[in-house]
Amino acid sequence: MRLFWAVLALFAYAFATDNVDLESAKIQARNLNLASDTEWRVLLHYSGSRSQIDDSRFFYAPDGMMDAESELLATLEAFYAAPPSVPPSTPSLKEMSTHPFDTHALCRFPARLRFLRAHLSLDNLPDVPCAEYDKMRAYLNPKHLSIIFPSAYFNSPASLFGHTFLLIEGDFDSRLLAYSLNFAARADEQRENGFVFAVRGLLGLYEGYYTMLPYYETLKNYKDTESRDIWEFRINFSEHEALRAFEHIWELREIYSDYFFFDENCSYNLLWILEAARPSLRLRDAFAYHVIPPETLFVLDENALLGETSYRPSKRTVLGLYTSRLDFGEIATLRALASGSVQPETLRGDPQSDSLLLEAALELNEYNYIAHKTDKDSYTQIAHNLAKARSRLGASPPVVAKTPASPMLAHRSARMFLGMLHKDGAQSSNALTLEARIAYHDRSESDRGLLAGTQIEFLRLMLRYEHLQEQGDRVRVEDFALLSLASFVPHSKLFSPFSYRLFLGAKPILDDSLAPYMQVGAGASAGGELAGVDVLGYYLFEILGADANDALAAAIQTLGASFDSYPFKLTFEASNRLYTTKAVENDLQGTIHWQFAHNLALFGRGQWRAWQNVQAPKRQRRRDCVLVGMRVYF
Image (spheres, helix red, strand yellow):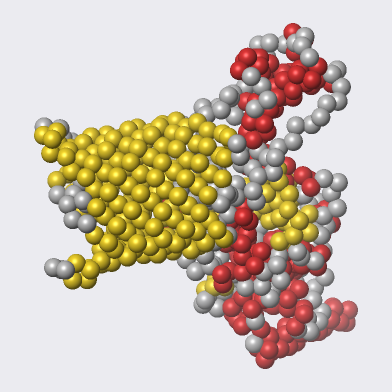
């Protein structure tokens, strides 16, 4: 009996000690006002008065999502909670452990623990072995962080902004074995198309999750499957800061936040990780209403965070490099080799030429497999035969892709324009114009650092101010774009992508009155480099719907071309429109863009428009206009 009371007294003393330590920590936290500390609010992802994490599993307090102090006190209670009396299970690096030890607060929230230990006397915390966390930390051994930028993907309008994710680097022999951290909407890619994804992403109807994968698997998706060139930027963090980033990443596993395409997106949510690693950073403050992936690179650069840069060409870029050295007869042989319909042993030409063909066939065979154009067994057998034949030919100079202009050389996404507009016609007029655009790029601008031939604009508005003798001062909307998309990807010897264009907004129609306007079309493009100038030509067949007095629709045929040699870019476009009202309109316009500084450019546009009624061909009307001014990017 005495032994029973002695044990009971020991447990009571231990319980009382824990309570004393817990209450002491709470008092210290209140006295220091730790809940208002910037680092604590960053760890909770607080923006304003509320956390931007929408998953209740991230919080211990019922009101922790909206009360930082309540969550701090609840976290302290969770830290002092008794551990279960069972041994830890064997941890797995691919799946989260559900063992009670690994789910204890001391194992779940290492970044919170580090922060509270730095400010409070956390005496007599329970001894909880964190097997899963310790093993993953030892495996990764975080020493460096890099931000990875896959360039725009021309087949998906939702991806024309590009993308960003983080790379956690340790002692691996190859960077490919390091782990990437991605934040993305969890969507059903089998059942939802790009349009549905864009709409739901705009409305925040997806849950976004942080996911970790080996870098080689992530590259397989972006570099090979989606044919996106990859830019890698080392972040100027110390090993200590890289470890702090990993600690917070650990806390966010399988925790979701509502995903919004324009602000709380892939790039924005990575900034929380960087601010947790270095709490003095205020990266998110640079963004007010939207976060575009390339803009995050500019913000990191402004904070002196970007270091060593490297470039990885996509599978499609590498294939283009090979095929540029082959004639059309060799391209036919290349296709046959890659499909297995012709065996490598049939080649009896020059060793250097055969080496080039075999290397290109290896790349094309892999591309076909990634694109699901061949099955795994066929891919493996063809690759084996090609590699075996190539090995017999010995070494040859490697085919190396030319490094394009870095995305850091591109213009900023927001734009202001101030200029003069002159219109000739039945009544001549001169007007001062002011234009503002939220994002991001149009085809009249320099493509340096961007995916050439693409356009994506969101919320662009041009106003014109003019003084008329009879009407006095007047301000009118000259042009409005809610959304403008275009992708002019040239045909190549191997690929024949279609080009497309979409416009939603309002434009002057026929008699120069502003009208709601929708235009969509598709066609083909061709282009290449000529004497150091990037040349692009295209043809589109488009349809238009508008409302100018009477309902109008039109069939449009368009020919266009552009000539880009930084800092100058010229574009030309001619179109013919046939309206249902039997009006015919011919339109010819050209632009010149001179980017004389990184984010400053002079711009000019000339346009000639003439229209007539089919039933009265002699009654022709004309309207010419010239626009000149300054573009400022920020």
